[in-house]
Length: 346
Image (cartoon, rainbow, N blue to C red):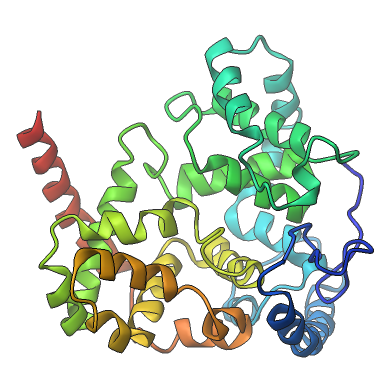
């Protein structure tokens, strides 16, 4: 997969001006997206110059306060793969395991795994021209290869719904199967362990953690949500399992992923808390379970999330302090609760 896709943020991918630089058709929000991108491209260009100076002559990307600050302000498209690979440890794993990815593709494949992955191929980004069977060279083959290799690499996970969207995003950005595979390994194996295991224990625990954080950061919303047992699974499971793909606008998701690869999973909570705190008045007007569910769908849309630069500034401001130590402690408590509930059910 060394073929480059045309376009960069602010420049159409092809002649159809309703297709964004990543191949997604934008029939609903094209005008607001174009308006945002016309302004955002100036920000991207400024950041690009600064990143180029920062990285000039360096073979290794260090993790330090300067780089962290730069990441929070956005990684330009031309540097994104390199920064994600370095920050997540994926580059180190790739360097330590030359040829490993291709050896996974060359091995005899599990028929059941192949069948499950094939089933999800046409469900992956149906609104993206790059993932259609009719598109040449197309990205479906690359997506299939990455998911198949990962299924053999991590047999405890195999393949789980949601992984196709994550692999697809990685392929769009890196344009490289092997790098996408190692970034999947970083996300699923280290940054978000147990999110995609058969029991999805990590995902379920983190939904409970968010509930506890909301009680502290937005007590009125926490009180409302307590009226509906199991509500967090209904309203935020998709946010976490898809890492905000198809939930938030693509430029915003990519900015979140910049920070996710660099700072880890606490970024997911910052995003969720920012959405909830910003839209607290609307949430508190909900009078029933369907009202709450509909409200949580609506709060991910509109100008607030479309303006990715302002939104990312808000996620590091609006929720206030949020340390990894706090999240780790809450995870321990919530894990015990979830496991106790499992024991009761069985």
